[in-house]
Length: 144
Image 1: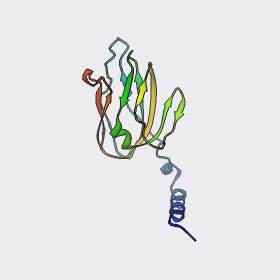
Image 2: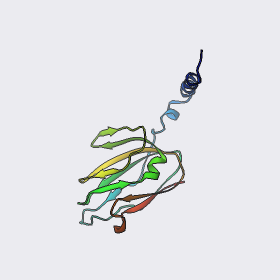
Image 3: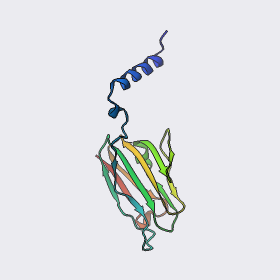
Image 4: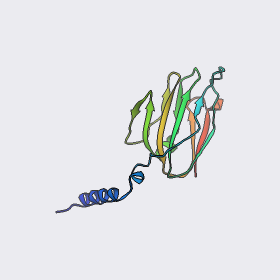
């Protein structure tokens, strides 16, 4: 006897088998976005390299977020993180894979995190460094 769940699983398997390999892995051919750098080498802990980052819905991207300042940065983008399919977050060549979005990214020291994702939902999504918004550490992810 076939249950609806078993039938749905079979249908998904057949669909994936019928697709070309490039269509099955949406992260192949991803685009590197401009690096988002928090702080700078000249001692400005509140500098931000890019306020707005534009993307297209349905495409794969890699974003490198780098902390160069001497502050602790708690990077939040809750609406954006919920509006993308997160492939992985890479720190020092170590990969974090999730079944849902991260709450936030925290930089206790200088370093870089790479975030790989596929945009799902169009819109404007604010990002901010918690506690440093009044110092200009805010911006937007714009997905068209």
